[in-house]
Structures are given as C-alpha cells and as structure tokens.
Length: 136
Length: 203
Image 1: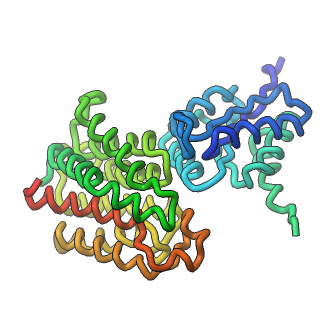
Image 2: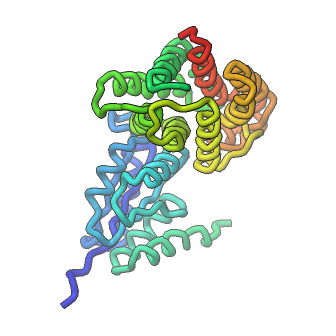
Image 3: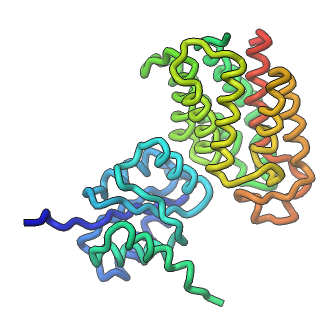
C-alpha cells in the first residue's frame, strides 16, 4: 500500500494582495479548478499596503504544505529577496523552493503541473518553461 | 574586546540614526524609488529596539544580538531593505558564533562575510548604485579604524550620485537614475557611522 498521493503546494508572493489572489484564481481556473492543489497567497504587507510580509509567506507555505514540497513564485524585488532569506534561515517547511519563473505564467504552469500530480522538480520545470515562450 | 552591550548600543545608535534621518532617506527614495525607504527602515529598527529591549528571546552574546536584529528586520521592514539588512546582520552574527566577547579582527571578518551574503542575495556588485557601494569600501577600511570605515562608507554613498542604477526598482529608470544619491547606500553609511560612534565611546 502506498501512502495517499499528495500534491505539491503552491505559494504566490506578490507586492499586492489583489495581484496574488487574482493570479491564484486565474491559475486555478486555467487548471480546470485544480481542486487537489493547495494554492496559498502572500500578498502585500499584511496591513493592506504594497510590499512583502515574511509572516504571510511563512503562513501560506505552512498552509499548503502536505509533505510533497512547496513551490514558491514571487513577483519582484523584496518578494524574491524575502523568500530567499526565509529559505536560508530555514523558516519555511522542508521541501520549499523558490521557482525561477515569471510570476503569472509560472504560476499557471506550476498549478497545472501540480494538479496533474507532478513532483516538485517537474513543477519547477513547468514553471520555468514559461520563460521559453516568446511574445515577440 | 567588544561585549554584548557594545552590540546592543550599536543597534540602538543605528535606530536613533534612522529615526533622525528617516525623512531624508525617504526623500532620496522619492525620485528613484518608491519613497518608502525611510519609513520602512524606521519600522524595522524600531522593532529591533523593541525586540532587544524585550529580553525575550534572551540575547547573551554579540552574535545573538545581531541575529535577532537581522531576523526582526526581515520580518518587519516590508521592502527589499528588510531581507538585505537582515541578511547583513544575521550573517555577521552567525560568523561571530556564541562568544561572549569578540575582537575587532573577528568583527571585521564577520562583517566581510555579512557584506558577501548581501551581495549574493541581491546579485549586485559595487558600481550598481546599491548598499554595496557604501558597505564594500566601508568594511574594506575597517582594518584602519571604525571611523575610517564610516568615512569610506559615507564617501561611497556620495559617489553613487553619478552612477546609473543596475539593480532594484531604480534600474527601471535607466539613465534617469543618474544624479541621485542611492538611499540604500546612504542608510548603509548610517549603520557604519553608528558603529564608529559606539566604538569611539560617544554613544
């Protein structure tokens, strides 16, 4: 008997709470609802402002962690740096990883891959794949 | 040798400097940033002051003072300066280990490592118009004296005026970032000046 299969959790870190939530909704919608995937959001400073909250990131990562790994996408500057420093500090669940991917496109790739049961490496590859799609 | 109290005074003096200069830092951040550097750092350092005063968690060594300060900045600043300054102090603190007193040589070596960690985290190099333009010449002058380090950092901060930003939000402005002093380099100089003041016994 194998253990029940769990999906990689996804965390979206944006300077804006509305951006994080909207991208989560979009990615989930494009993944056909993706009921099996936990998508956590950490948007803004926690008091409604634009910025990054380490506390929200840690909370979101813990919320989506089921032991299969946590794939984190971040939008800009302090979002990226805060995730990196939390990782160095060991404050995120084991198996957490910051994906090198564009925020929105990467989120869609990651949620779709995770909902299909992909492991963390494959989720990361799916998100990074978005860099290869040229628009011009 | 420098004891735990020396490092508490350093953080307290740095907090006072940020309080004094917050408006100026935000002003510098207005033309090339998002006008929040002063208020972000002020929030962070006030939290550092409160954390160190709280006595919980207890801090019993120079390394613990800096690590607590660094963790507090990462969790309270809300902008890129949080993880950057947080990494600087935390890495420096880790390098100091749990010794109850540290030599000036050990502090200098630890600060080198801390500045290296900032460069690695942000991916910036000297000349990119960032904190590193003050920190790198600052720590390089630590071998001379704390005052020399503060002066070199201040000079480095002023020398960012003609530079074009290559990292952070200011880099999106391209050539229009030229002609403004970098706010992060400016606050880095404040931090090293606070260290010099404490070392000179003035604070």
